[in-house]
Amino acid sequence: AQWLAVVALGVGPVGAAFYAWDIGMKCGDIRVLGAASYATPLLSTSFLILAGFAKPSAGIAIAAVLIAGGGLIAAKDMLTRRP
Image (cartoon, rainbow, N blue to C red; front, side, top):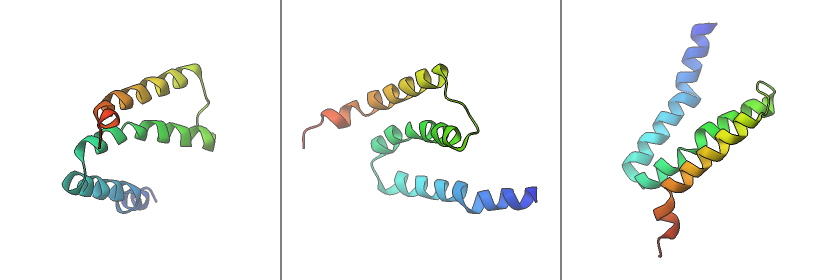
C-alpha cells in the first residue's frame, strides 16, 4: 500500500508539479515563477489548517507575513514596471 501511494504521488500531484514547473521555466517569465513560488508554503500550511492537521498559531501567522513579504520583495520590479 505504501509503494502504491508513492507511485500515485509521483504520477499525480508531485509529477504534475514538476511537469508544470518545467513548462514554466521553458516558456514563462522566470521572475514571475520565482515570485509565485513563495505561495507554495502558504497554500500547503493553509490546507493543513483547514483539514484539521495543524492548528493556527501566532508563529504560523508571523511566518505567513514574512513569506508574503518575501514574495512582495521578489515581485517588486514586476509590480512597479510600467507597460
